[in-house]
Length: 335
Image 1: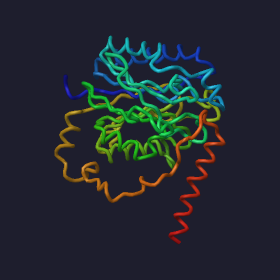
Image 2 (image 1 turned 90 degrees about the vertical axis):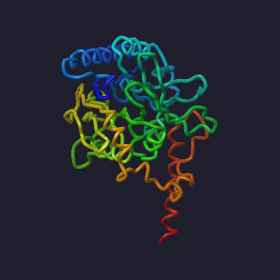
Image 3 (image 1 turned 120 degrees about the vertical axis):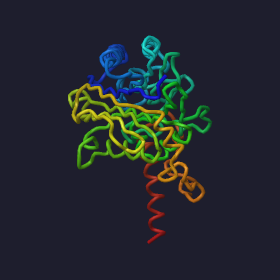
Image 4 (image 1 turned 180 degrees about the horizontal axis):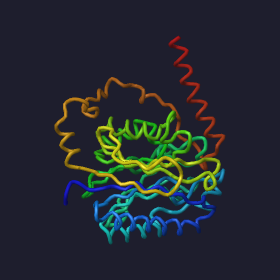
């Protein structure tokens, strides 16, 4: 196949679900978006990758893990990922699902915020959010389990490139995307629910800022789908959309207008150009120029893993307070 294809960032605007029985309708609507996008853009572009936002299936609207598990959480893979797999087989496309609240019997007291990459052959990878948005999210992170058996940062080799994904708040931690890049990712996928005021408009357009920065520092494409739900659908937050595609030099290739609403924006992924630049460049190669040995900060523990499950908000607050106190002690030593 050609090294050039198109990716679609598909933002959603659904009412907030209260029960897992409502998820099937969201899946049906997202499957319709996939078909409409592929068929509708076919005269213009070959759309092969479609990305949906965080919380497209369910959001953590309950304030404790027990309620989340009993009302909204699902095993992953599930019947919904099977529907996406059938679409991928029919159209030869790849779908990065909106996130699920995942219940895994191996972790009976935890809920994960999880997205899967689905291709023509079925589920290709499962990513669990490493950095839940604390203290609001009570999800567990792979970081919370000392003997976590899987790679927290999976990268998948596909016919459309090497794909890695991270979820929303993960993107404010450069280490997360660096690890995906050093694991081989060429296309960094962002599944996000980035609320106002940190959206796509000044003066605090963090959404655009971090998408472009992560693309540049990792010499990678970014395909970022943001939640577009209005305040009525997902109180207490409004979600500004602005879904976008960015190239490896930080150029915005396509972006949806800022503001709520279901929208689709498509843009080109030129694997040949990316690979040629990565091979050719001697300057501004921040992966190749990384002086790993000189940085010591990751050798010191900051936010400790959760020591008990289910995770409760008070326990998150205690861990955050301990981390902040340690940072304050460092500051005092330098005064």
